[in-house]
Length: 198
Image (cartoon, rainbow, N blue to C red; front, side, top):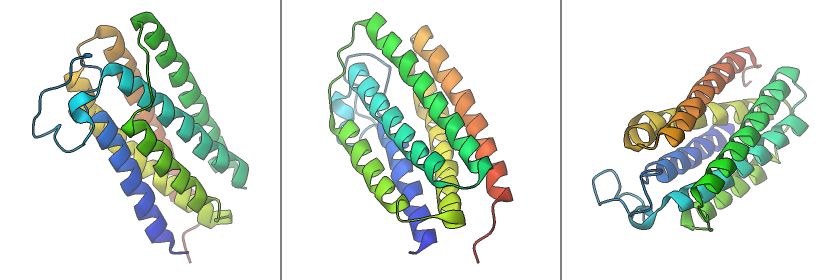
């Protein structure tokens, strides 16, 4: 197994996931966003609604919980296990908060192309990670988390937050961004403590 290639696959997949999902004008309105240089890159952006966004986010949370539960179960490093547990807890909390917002807004999220893409990418990632063990698994997992959180922070700062007007959703996004930044710092610190590749 080429571990650098696995890292690249994970980083690229999750960057596409973050930028493809979060660049869609999420949380603006139920009205399709106008075409622009920023929105024409993804096929689903012209019709992507708030309800679609919340379905995609629910799928993302579910798959991140699965990936980090795999890490929690597979790693023998207590530091990696603690990190994975923290990420699982945060995604479960975000799912609950998103569900409350969906209920208050009366949205009816349905499956869509972005949700399907998230599932496909995450399932492929899970399959690749399942073949690893020991320090190789820990490095691949943490490297993937670092790449993921960098992509998410970029999407928050340049796409989601500037385009979100609803005060309640904006407050939730700011809270989520702060937790993502905390997780990035934790993952970077942890990566520096892991045994380097031979």
